Length: 338
Image 1 (cartoon, rainbow, N blue to C red):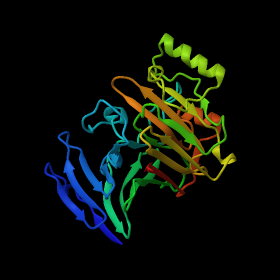
Image 2 (image 1 turned 90 degrees about the horizontal axis):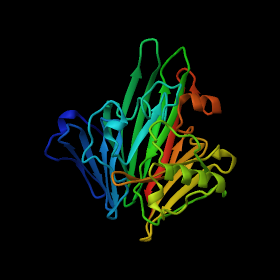
Image 3 (image 1 turned 135 degrees about the horizontal axis):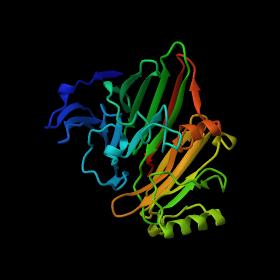
Image 4 (image 1 turned 120 degrees about the vertical axis):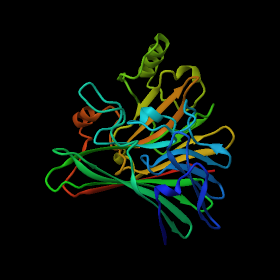
C-alpha cells in the first residue's frame, strides 16, 4: 500500500501530475471558479473528483461514453448546497436529512453534506486499485457531532468503480439521525432499456408532488395515467413526457435478496450498472427528467429511505438512528459494465 496525503498547495491552475504508474495517473488542477479537482485515469477512462468539496464525482467517462447527465453547469461552482452546482455525476445526499424537504422539514435540498468543505484528502494506491478519500467533521453546539468519510475506488482496466461512505456518530451522549442516498445522475440514453434483478412491480410511482416540481396539465394527465395503469417506465422512448420529472420508489428490498443489480442498457450495446447490498440500501429511487437544460436517467439511486424528507422517513419507520460512537458503512458498485 502507498498512501499519499494531498495538500491544497498541490492544486493550481496548471495541471500537476501527483501519481503515474502502469495502471493509473492522477492530476490535480483548479477550475476558474476556484474549486479544486482531481482527474483519476485508468486504461478505460477517467473520473473527475472534487476532493475538498463533498468528494463529489463531477464527471465520469469510460470507453468514450459519458456517464454524466446533461446540465447547465460548465464547471463546479462553490455554494452552500447542491443546487448551487447541480451538474455533477454523483454526490452524497444527507446526512442528517435527505432528499426534498417536506412541509415539516427545515433543511436545504438534499441536506447539509453534499458540498461540505472536506479535509485530510488522500490517495491510497494498492495492487490493481486506487482509493481517493477525504473526511468531514460536522459539529454543532447543542447539536449533532459526526465524522463522514466518503471515498471512491477505481480498479485497474475497469469501467466500474466503488463509491463508499462511512458515518460515525462522535457524540458520547446522544443518538443522531441518519439519512443517506448515493445520488448518481446518469446520462439519459434515448431508447435505453432499464432492467433490474427484482420482481416485477417492485418500483411504484411517486404520488406526492414536491415543492420544486411545477406540474403542467400534460404532466398531471400522464402522471394520472401511470398511477391508474401502474406502469413503470422501463424504456426511455418518450422524452416529451419527462418534464417535470417522473419518479418511482421501491419499498424494503431486503425482502427479496441480499444484493440487487440495476442496469441501463444503451442502444449502442453498452450498459451502465449499479449494484448494492440491500441491508445497506433498502430503498432505491428511479428519477427521470428530460428538457432542453437537464437530461438525466438516474435509474437507481440507492438510499436508506425515500428522498421525501426527514419527517416522511420518520413516519415510514425508515429513519436510522446511530447510537453514541456507532459507525455505519455503505458501498455501491457502479459505472460502465461493458
